[in-house]
Amino acid sequence: MDLEAYLSGFTDGEGCFCVSLNKSKRHSLGWEIRPSFSVSQNRERSEVLELLKQTLGCGNIRPDPSDNTLKYEVRCVNDLVERVLPHFDKYPILSSKRRDYDLFAEVCRRMYDGEHLQAEGFDQIVDLAFQMNPSGKRKYSREEVKL
Image (cartoon, rainbow, N blue to C red; front, side, top):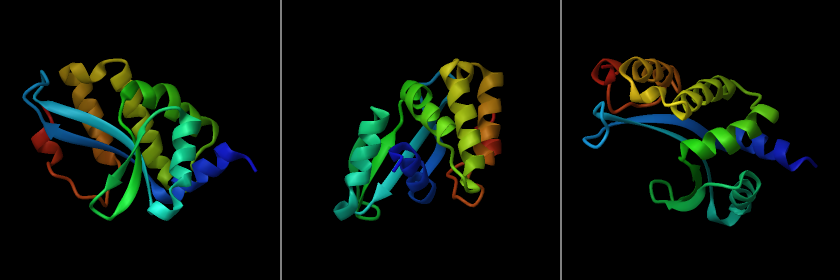
């Protein structure tokens, strides 16, 4: 069995690529953009989360009190670009979740290049983020976030 392909397939079913936007006084544009890759699993089947962490060489596993599961998560932009994205580029997601992955990857790469630090790049990243997970709930509207 190809472990890396298995982990991509598992992520296709149980994972999430998301970008959250939060007001922030410590960020120069007044907003924080936070990309996150995560996979949740029941405690009794958490071995796969350990495999993800070992294979990707980054991230953390923590309890998720919202649904009493464990969550493997990577939030560091450098780790996302240098470790997570190369994995999913080589072993792609095969479902419609691939669209969210492609948008997520674009956001991460732009942030890695520092584009989120300037108003124009920030707004372009916000536009990409709002195309992701269209059925998901959002704390802020696009109009509230755009500069």
